[in-house]
Length: 459
Image (cartoon, rainbow, N blue to C red; front, side, top):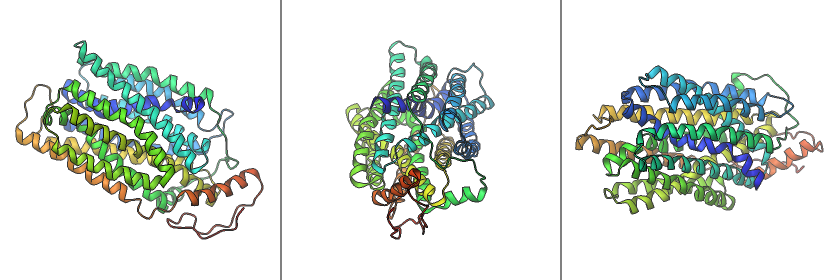
């Protein structure tokens, strides 16, 4: 367990960033610096869309990397300084910032973020080889990430008590700048990195990439991941606006409610990891998506200013949302095993780059579309502006409807999903035999079929 926690520590700063950047940074640039909602949304949207083409290249280079210190360790070490510099420039900017300034440092941030996160996920998949073991490892990463998010959310509350609310976002940035190198150092110094026997460099073309995208099992994960990231991401971008203007909470109170939502993810990650080991990852994902949509619909009945009821609702939402990230990442590792057995090639980094790309597209769409719609309905985000009841009601509808639709679609993607524990155990048995040199590569049928695989001779 101590080694598992040490390996998971890079997730601490990643979790803190996920909340601080998605929830507070767009609001900070729009409200504090007075950038137009459309300009802030465009900066996030355009940069993330452009960055999506970088992740597959990073994943490909990771899979082809061979160094004396490992395949993924070197990339994680490279990502830390870039991420630290970008976070500093984004969270503590000079006055008079512009859209190009925001866009430029967002691009640097996303590249550094990708280097660390893709390394961490790919590395985790080779540490944990078994179907249920992956739920445990990715669950630990999710718990540590959730703790990072929860702790960074304490900063606005503490700053509000001191009457220094304007300094909350820069303080969040410094918290992350300090946490990132500590987490990376712990993981890279204390964790071994096994290198599979097929770790040679190889040619790779667009056809190979497209083949991975079109695999039925991976295609389901990609589509589901997009939907399950877009829904909560849409809510994150509008969270402060919704709970302040529509539900009557002060910004510190809304921040403390968000802390409850994030903290619930610690228990949720452990609980849904346990559930996945009992009923399978894809079924656990369906349970989480259905429950999340029902709870989100319940926010329409939330009385204004009712803190206890809001806290209970966000507690349930946070518990269920924790499963979205850990379960899809664990399932991608299973697909990577299937690909390695079928093709004899390592594609772990590339497959995780696809998921990272999907999440960035969803995040860019969530901020770009939600902020554009808010501007179109006449909602004004600038500090001290009183919005009309019609604008506030429109903002409520925008906040609720789209996330429910996408989260339900994300859960529905796993009806008929075939890469379950039994099928994966067969794949792992053959891979273990190949790695041990006790078996020849099997003659495969349709290993990437999305339903049951024809029986094969046991190894």
